[in-house]
Length: 218
Image (tube, helix red, strand yellow):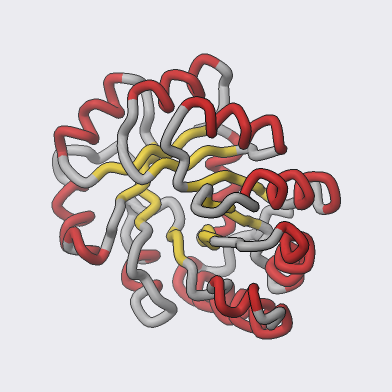
């Protein structure tokens, strides 16, 4: 498995971040890191995404830093140039996937159906985003996919909370879980970085309790 994706698996969680101001990027990343969550997926849902990635990559290079909600090859280019180490897309776009594969960039395209999983396997991908997880059946659907796709690992994202997190972590085909509850846009915008650190610590404790204290990759 790609080393970046393997590191995500050791952490077990991927905070999915919507950030409105690049000024908040480094304080946010520090709060996550201090909460033993050295991962951030900065989504391209705002104009600040590229600059936020750049600032985190510059000031906290130890973070496992990715770009999410990537919809075009041009956005992939922007994200990688800014410092992103992995790319996440909400769906399966061959242009985005092929761009990443050609440049050896870790990519987890979103899938919702067995047909999309097969498309990903045809390109040699074995770690995929399952999105939107809760709306697609959550853990029940992932258990069903484990039958025909026993070698595929998923990062379920969408509607997952601290309450439902353990159920996902217990599944052998779940590499890590994506979620935004640890660092919501409201918490970031209002500068509640101590609360973000607390929620990150709480989430990491859940991972430890379920997976037996897997080592945090820093």
